[in-house]
Image 1 (cartoon, helix red, strand yellow):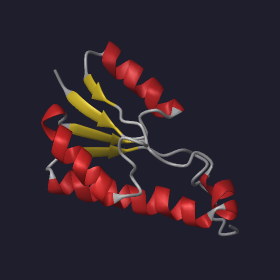
Image 2: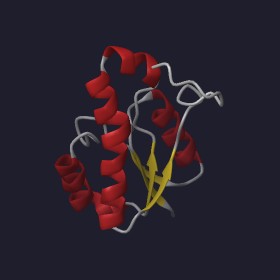
Image 3: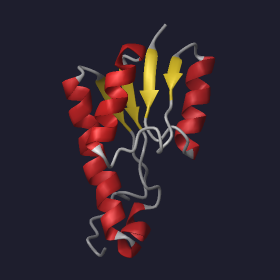
Image 4: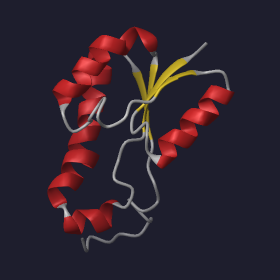
Length: 117
């Protein structure tokens, strides 16, 4: 049985993904933000230290879901979550030798060159 960790585990996308993965007979860990806050590397490292034998793969789905709108209102939260948080997850995966897949949404980049943030 394949074992996966899904970041953003209690968010809408990650919740649906975890249900689908379980139906496909995957073992799934999907921690809440309180259990593993991607904005804090130490928190991720502690979670990985505790649970790394229980998963082989990471699907990184934790993010602000309307990043450009939220970036305008709360730039610090946007950068901490979508940029630094993603970096933290990648660093932990490297350290613990986990394979990672990331997700994105069309609201991040529509395909048009537009720098009006």
